[in-house]
Image 1 (tube, helix red, strand yellow):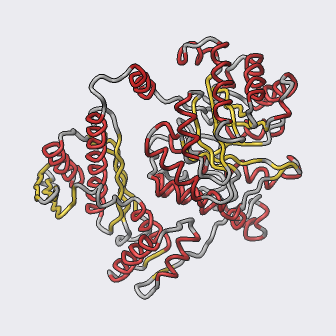
Image 2 (tube, helix red, strand yellow; image 1 turned 90 degrees about the horizontal axis):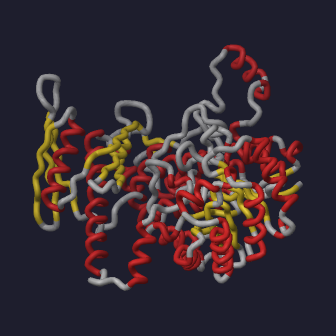
Image 3 (tube, one colour; image 1 turned 90 degrees about the vertical axis):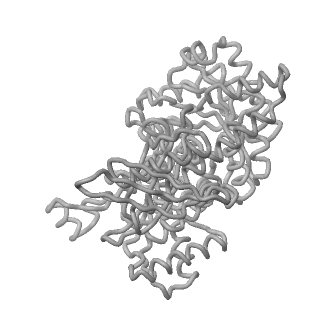
Length: 542
């Protein structure tokens, strides 16, 4: 059977999902689990887009042992150089170069002629070959690109040294028959097509990403680009778990296989959901809560008699585990470490020690600590700020609420060596606490922070369940700052999450101020060009 390369872009395209944002530590945890899952290529980020993205790609490149680590780059010198530096420590590395090729994108976004686009693509691929022999090229918005121009630029990219050619359905426009026709046309018309691996990358705007990807595979693509849980911009990307299980279950039909340990799918799905804060819909194929549940009487009878009557995949095939580990106050670090490893969390000793302390504190309050609680605490530890980043600290918060008066909150914070008190009112205790915190941040540091998103969920059942709070602040310029926290008290969880978000906003402001101060008074023409390029909206290959 032919081998299908699984190219995972959860850490690049998936992180572009609205509301999804990962720090370097979280990205590394996910990357390690993706390698454990058996993913062939991990697109770890877009290094030029931010210092954090560059650092994330570099840390992953330096850490992973088997998977190819890939960095994305526009067909521009500064992008390719940043990607090259970021992945240089990888045992196996790839640079993914892209440029838009549809008439709409060339005219409106790039303002370049077709000849200029081909020239940029060739120059970009050649520059990337200076860093690695493994170079992928994507003609962005390819499903809306003229077929003959697609063939022209693909042939030129292969001649320049591209070893993988990816065909992206950037806006989810294609349908399966159309995408098959495009792949076959490329294979027939491009004389050097056999010198490169053909790849497909589909978005889900019409709900056809998986179907399009499988159709492209049948037409000749040997690499499929996808994300865990189908994360991605707008309606998301092709879902890795759906593609892999379709190939696994129907391997005789496709005459193909992938090197994925399917029993790690469930753990990987939940890990990504936990760390991105984006829940998996209940009826999601393969990994949703309802994927192996049955309510209709006829179905229940059939399943009880023989599960194959209404289940084409067994729950254990994708790593579903019915038994949940229960931890008590006498449980040791080893038991907690094993529980976390099963779920993809490989923490360092200090992080594990902190999780263990918090588990014991929770158990001492006479709560039965379940596996989901441990995972939530581990997630909380991973998202902790460093001591240098924790500029604002929460000392105390008190709220008053009821049905006969306006809820109010008083919050006591430390800013450096000083104690600062903030007060606020709102439609509820959390809203009041947010206003109290916002008043202190504005008074002490300047930015006006607006609470754009607030989410609260119970980790396990019962009135004593841990609460997981997630917030997103925005400043006047539209910059977003996430915060999250876990606590048995919903108000404290909410306030701790908001304090974390406020600290990120203050840190961002300070870094921006230092960057401005370090700029020369009259930048050179080259510096001006670099700043203008950096200020342009980032292109997204897919």
